[in-house]
Image (cartoon, rainbow, N blue to C red; front, side, top):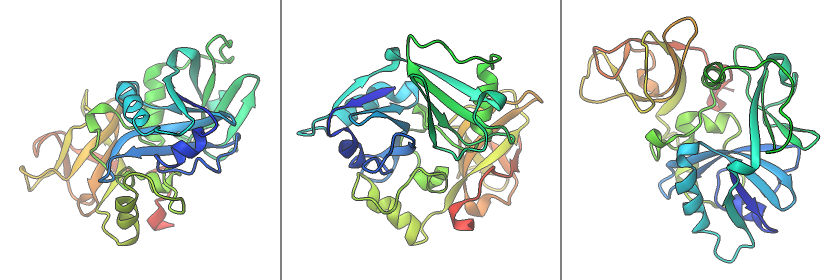
Length: 286
């Protein structure tokens, strides 16, 4: 978790990330991407506005150190301080009856000192992220295993960028424009021209799909092939989690043209991918 503090915290992030932080309210979270100049994702965040001059950025642990270092390079004269706040806050996942229901994704509710961020549902069950100062007692409820939480992350269709897929995708390749991760009306940020061109000039050729694979393990970054071409992959595994019914569920970024073909993980002889419906509509399909 990265903490951004100072009177310019919101304006600084607004100029660096793919979402609008200048107009963020305390009851709103932001899904956002940090991009290089070519529009490729270097990190993804859930941003929570704890106060007028403090914003928390939740990201994958394996990208935190390098992302903190790189973001800090751009502070320059902005009145903003960036730090690793992982030890200062506790974070819990809420699912089912423990999570608020009937609430729009990226809404934020306050429970005492805790911020409760509504996430996208999985398997029709509400999900939320509980974030509070480290000394805050954990929320009540039956414990959920980490493996089941990770499965819900996959089945929600909302990808979190991790080190194996660093700079592999523009945001639309993981459906971020359809789930609140890109604001096309805000001002400039690194990679914006590439993102806008992909959206409005019809150059986007990849989307992320939900899939099931009959395999024991499926690593993030595994390439996906169609049955007719062993040389050129048509996709990449973005996120994966074991299914309690056997096999692995995964988010896979695929060439749109290949989505109706027979697809295999790792090689043309690898396990077959079974594509499943996403739990949300893609922006181009609305």
